Length: 348
Ligand SMILES: Nc1ncnc2c1ncn2[C@@H]1O[C@H](COP(=O)(O)OP(=O)(O)OP(=O)(O)O)[C@@H](O)[C@H]1O
Ligand SMILES: [Mg+2]
Ligand SMILES: [Zn+2]
Image 1 (tube, protein in one colour):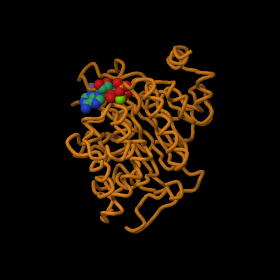
Image 2 (cartoon, helix red, strand yellow; image 1 turned 60 degrees about the horizontal axis):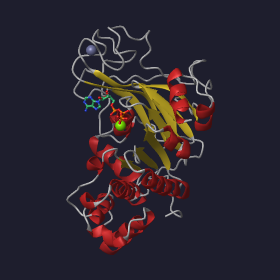
Image 3 (tube, rainbow, N blue to C red; image 1 turned 90 degrees about the vertical axis):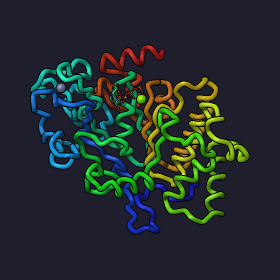
Image 4 (cartoon, rainbow, N blue to C red; image 1 turned 90 degrees about the horizontal axis):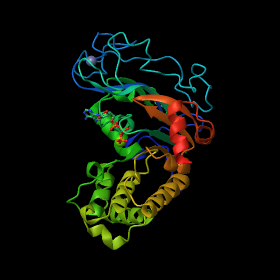
């Protein structure tokens, strides 16, 4: 596995392959906005600098907010973006933006819409692990689902692997292809990522088949290789994930997610709810995969200890907004936002 190139967007057999320069992000997101419910943009009509996402069937087609400014590495706080804002160039939920009623936390008091994401921007660079931390309900899973095209955001621009177009605007088929060949996802809830009545091997093979691997011998070989990587004994491949423990189910999801050697891995609370010893095991597996294969990963967790262990850089989310970003060490040593300070001090 480590000897394979991982940063290709499309399966070379199917045509073009886009290779990414090391200093170019594999994923670059800006202005991602997602709210659930009817009504809103803050109920008064102004969705905030850039097109009414509600107009037209697909909210994004026909008015996306092209925010200026590089979503940037955000590296050191204060680098890029407004000073004093921890380097966050975007603030979708700025008070000055709210032409309407203003939100109560992430909820519109008038129509009840939940603003799960408000102008989230980020970049992910080759081989790095970007941590997303934040309290329950801050929008972390919604972010992961939008990036994996499970949800259609109301606004935002997503550029993948050096390609110029907004991936959110691609056809359903093109999005599916990208997701199949270039992305892997581990869902917070294994039920969302696994078919519980299929065997573990079939679950993993599903992604391989979807990506056009039709040679049965090769398919089998790869499934067993993947089981070995995530440290599941080969003979258990015949069982269904329903009979597996939580940690094992997450490892099956990981095997499935990396099956096609994606350039981008999305991990949503991979270790939450697991015993500490099982957590350590799953984290070890992830660490190994990421370091050896050079995959770029977004690691979502409400647990700063997990982030500390794996993430090079970290974004802190609160009520659908990025409130702080920087190198993980910096955030841990010198948290700026009050919320982050609480989070960090609770870890000590
Ligand atoms: N399908 C949905 N319909 C309506 N509201 C939703 C939906 N999915 C998420 N939300 C709301 O959006 C907000 C963000 O939810 P999300 O699941 O992204 O948070 P999270 O940070 O992943 O939380 P947790 O740490 O508990 O997993 C929450 O207020 C949630 O209730
Ligand atoms: Mg979540
Ligand atoms: Zn509203």
